[in-house]
Image (cartoon, rainbow, N blue to C red; front, side, top):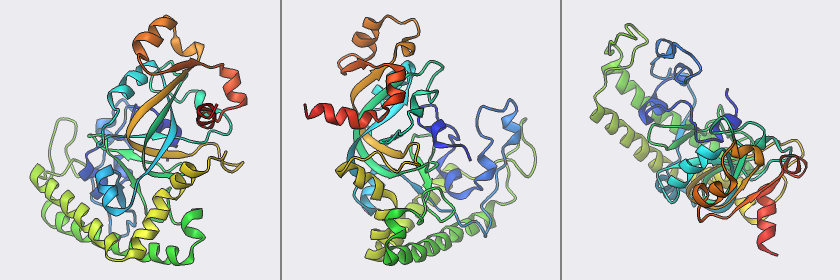
Length: 331
């Protein structure tokens, strides 16, 4: 499992289609990144097996609003100069999400979690949190920029978190909900397998049982729509299901939006998925400029967004920069 540190930046791994994320075997898609020279040959396209108990939830803010209430909060995002420019273009877009943080107890996020080879920039954002927890949640992203997370017991954000595990009724509801959702998912996969299991695309890079399925685009869209509609229907079928889901995905963001804490002493950083965000402030280190004139950075790259230089060592010694920013507003 690749940790969240590699997903905090705008450089996103596993940019597969939403259909692939929802219906295909997770392990077969792990080679769909640029760490391997021959990654085209390493991809494996297989429908999820019947014993696959994962369930992927798309984090589109409009969809999440049908199931729960996203939480507005302030969070940080680690990046580099190139990442700042990309981040500015993503502002106020409900269809795009990024991974952010509110906790960085050990100051690790300024040490090499970058969208480019330079890094050294921490951006403060205000946005709608559609999911979060006080540890890695291993979110993925599709080609359109929508993040997906496994909400099953096998996922990184599961019922064994403090917001569900401490509530016996919520935990019971969660277990029942997951059984219904997984059963529903496999019903769709069985229909797909019956028609397309033996239909494979053949390319010069791939010829055989691991090749992509030859499924028309309109069919994929139909099954995605059924998946989304069925997920909403099942979750809304019982108020206890909705309550359990809300605690699971939004318990931590809700806590952080009301009472800012450093987090537990054994937590390095948390992960918050933000949508529909705007940039409030940019903190940068000397190293992050990498030869770029500081005035040019402030006036052209940061532009109208407030920016402030911070010391690399100062941040490591007192790293919770989001909390610092909030305190500065009260002065």
